[in-house]
Length: 407
Image (tube, rainbow, N blue to C red; front, side):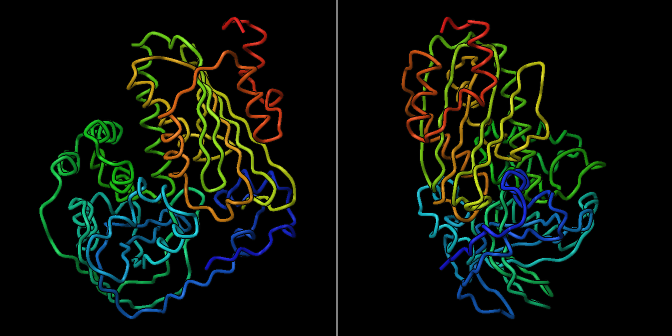
């Protein structure tokens, strides 16, 4: 059972916390005071050893970079454990069930240098082999030291407790040929490897693991990449690729509106005729994880073909929102501009990662609704949220000034 304590007494402005999301530590503290306030009872007993099937799952920490805690994760059970990693499966579950499931993934780790990816030792080679198998694989962990610390992160999925590994063993099996191709091609750029894998229908979280474990790119430049960074880097790399391809297509012929609500996250999307422009507006409402009842936080970012956002104020959700829409536009072979509004309510009381942003927007894109004007879009969002986002949208002001769309 997960019971968050109140965060109303955190002595920082809510917009600071929403912008930071425990990643940048903008408050100057060594640990996020909001995440410290979660009281979590997992009913998971400390272990001396773990014997189970890894989905496969791995984790690379960022706290001491370029030294990283790196290792596998698995539940204390055997069989088909792919449900623990499948984002398509997780997005259909209740938030509480997701947290319970993910917190039953025990972690193990050793400390390595980021550059060890260029000359993997036996331990890292075993982790590489685990990912190349790319399906649930039996593993055994013998812990040198176990702790009950859980991993909560705005970007990555939650992980359960774990500790320092004394011994690690996994069953061997046949590997995925697409993964082998990019792993053993040590002259292939990491960006090209990511694009190749995605175009060969490799799941995003598998690509993220390959990047995180330093398995992609020119051997001279390979590095271990913290999990949270690898997620954003993969989304960003693919977004850049699909955005460039928009230049090959005609503009979409009409405006379309999309909507999706899940986990207390409400997504409102407008796609409209344009060569390329993207705006993301993110709102953390009362009771939501980063602001509690201290007030609202609203962040806005805008980019077009001439101005690229590389360090968005809302963090990885900016890229997680953009990627599925660009993939959608490439599928229908149209260029367009688009606005994404994410309104987070108090139902989202614990972060589970930006994967849910990506998956929920994908779900929304299955049901396009024609809409007459950008004013109609913002009127619908105001009706749903009580906020008039026209005054926060640069695209709205630009369109109403330029009259480019005739609205």
